[in-house]
Amino acid sequence: MEAQQSETKDKKTFLLEHDRPNCISCGACASVTPQFWEMNKDDGKSDIINGKHRHDEWQELTIKEKDLQCNKEAADVCPVNVIHLTDDDGNKIT
Ligand code: SF4
Image (cartoon, rainbow, N blue to C red; front, side, top):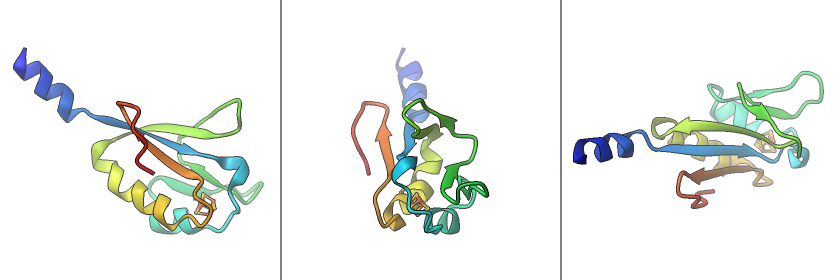
């Protein structure tokens, strides 16, 4: 049981969200974290690579703990704070 619990802990995930309607197309996220962010050629806004498009026009992607830091950097450079990270307990990180 204990082994199972520690295994679960190692597999902690985070929800990366993009408030796409409020993105101002500055390109900073794609510049610092190109492995997760790219610019959309059609409307000039950024996209989470392989992110799911939601009905509210936000995007989301579940990421692993190893990918948290680089996405925190993307959130930190976003001038309008439209990149959000939440842990799997629902605690807001950015
Ligand atoms: S840094 Fe923010 S505003 Fe700039 S492209 Fe990325 S999500 Fe959009």
